[in-house]
Each structure stands twice: as structure tokens, then as C-alpha cells.
Length: 432
Image 1 (tube, rainbow, N blue to C red):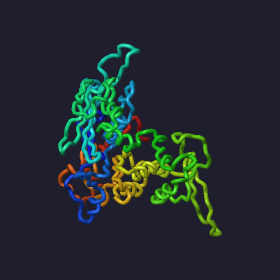
Image 2 (cartoon, helix red, strand yellow; image 1 turned 120 degrees about the vertical axis):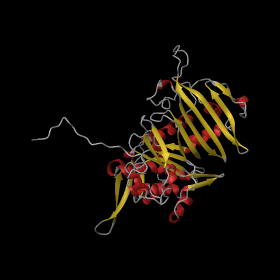
Image 3 (cartoon, helix red, strand yellow; image 1 turned 60 degrees about the vertical axis):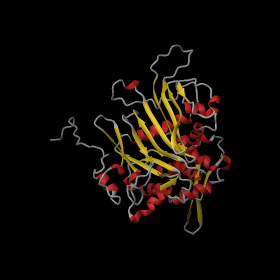
Image 4 (cartoon, rainbow, N blue to C red; image 1 turned 90 degrees about the vertical axis):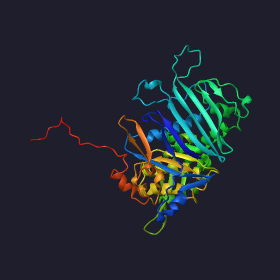
């Protein structure tokens, strides 16, 4: 499970900003006591949140926070290669001196198998010019990297790294790990490839198998639904689970299917390949089935929910906690549908493995003490130097736990609102 994530010097983020899933000491109002019991995970002496949402004006940095985490996780998922794949992370805050030569910082704290791990690295552009096209060259390099883990309740070092200088004396089985070859390669990924029982492998296996984001191409994102249903020829095998899920959102279908085997691989399937059956009673009271094409006959909201369904069902069906990132979760969704989606993650009877969700949104209907706690809401706003500031609603003083969070937010009590000005087009003259 993810405890917290920190980032510095990435896009609009200049100073270290941290988003935490650790609960504060606050309690929900008495009439909403179930919010605490539902929304909090108690594991290994840690109280963690299942869902956290980030709010704020457009261009305030919401997406940059979650993209930083997504790119960080993706870098760990990627296999070691002679070619650098760190360009997405090497995107420093530009409004500073010598910006392109500064280091960007990323760090995560995890709880896996009842042990805490703190892992991170800094990345920067390679200050050296390429000597020859025949020699390996990395446009981006890892400037530093570290991994610490708990042992006897203390946090101890597993390894540290500065450029290509590695200190791994305390790492088990270090003798079986070959020397690091490339300046852009993550030491964590390198070690995990040669020692599948190491803390590095434990962390990488969790991130590869249990973290999911919607920043990938929508075609890849949609694959979770197709994969959940099985192969093309077996798409009806688990279709009832999908239909039951859609039905809970008042989308009543009797069947979901591929009309024929198109020969496409799963990653090539699109909305146009999916058909749904809906029934109605005609004038004679007879049941009539109507075949609908997902692409041509259904709304954008239905299509998006279809794409999300496999991902959500997969998260809930894994034997261990998953972690999902959804940017702009409210896109194409009715407020009631969005509330239900969040309540599913917070429902211990549905989310039995305690999967976590990090999302961004503009929908203030979620901002109610009957749905989420104060420490589950974060805000981003731009500072005077155009950098992003991230803060939690629980950080603000004088806010009652039973307050109307949405009303107070829109009234400007919490900040993180767009600053709007009057607009006059001087090039247009009024008719006399």
C-alpha cells in the first residue's frame, strides 16, 4: 500500500510537495461515524486512507502531482535498457536559474508485507555531450537513488547511490548483483532483475502488478475491461459480473458481447467492437431485445464507465491491495455516479482487499463529511512565483468536521479557486 509520495522540481512543482494517505487524528461527526470505519484501513499499526482527492483551479498543478507519481511508477515498471526512458520525469520547474540543469526529486513510502519502505531518486539532464554515436549515451541520468526499509521497528539503509557510486553493503545477496552499466538505469530495477527475493523485487512486483493509472493511452486503459472478461472467444464467460456492475449504476443490459471474432488482439479492440443488448416490452407486452453498439449508440459517460469497469473490478478482485490513479475522475460522469464510485472504494464489503484510489476532480458534490473526511481532500493553488502548492483540508485551522465543505470551498474559505477578471475586447466597438 502507498503511504505517501513526494515530488520536487517537476513541471509547476518547485518545492517539495507531499500527498499522504496517513490519517490525521480528527474524527468524523457523530452522525457520520461510519465514514471513519469505512474510509480508513488499519494495517500493521498504520491508519491509512482508501481514497484521496485533489481539487483546485485549472492549471494549478493537480494533474502534475498525479502525473509525477504516474511517471515515477512507470519508470520502475520499465525493464532495464540501454536507452533512457526518463525523459518524462526530467521536466524541471522552468522559472528558476539554470532550470534545465537542475535535479528533479521523487520519493515514495510504501507498506508491503507489514514492512515500510522509503524509496526515491533524483534525475537530471546529462551534463556531458555525446562523444560518439558508437558509444552508449543517456540524455537523462540518475543523480542519486536510495532505499530504506524497516528492521526491528527501525528504518535501515538497503542501498544509496550517487551517480554511479553505489553503497550496497547492507543489501542481502549483493554478490549476485552485477555492476550497474548505465547512468540512466534505476538500481532498484537492476537489483530486482537479479534477485527476485530482495526488497527491490518486492517493491517492483507491487508497482508492476498492482498500480494502475489512466495516463496511458485510452486503448491500453480499456484493455482492463477486455482482460477481465477473458479472451475474445470467451468474452461472455464473466460478462455477468460486468453487467451486474453496470446495473448498479442504472445501466441495465442483458448481454455484452463481440458480434464476431474480428481477429483483433485485445489491445486493438475498440468501442466499435462491443455490443450490448437492452430489452423493452412492446405494445403487446412482449419482450423485445435491441442490439446496441457501444461506440455509436451510447453516451460518452457510458463509454467511460465501461472502460473503467474492468480496472475497478480487477482492483477489487486481487488478493492484495491495488493502487489506482484517475485524473479528472468526474469527466463525463453525473455527480451521483461519481459519488457512488467513490463510495464503492470506501465500502469494506466491496473493496475487501483495501485497494486505494487517488483522483483529481472539480466536482464539489463529493465534498461532504457524509462521504469523505477532511484529510481525504487536498488542494493545489499557484503561488506568486507560479509554482504549485499542495495542502490538505485537514491542514487548515478553524474548519469544523461537520462543515459544508463544498459550500465553504466555493466561498473561498480554502483557497485553490480560479482568480477571474472582467474581460473587455477593445477591438470591438459598440453599435451606435
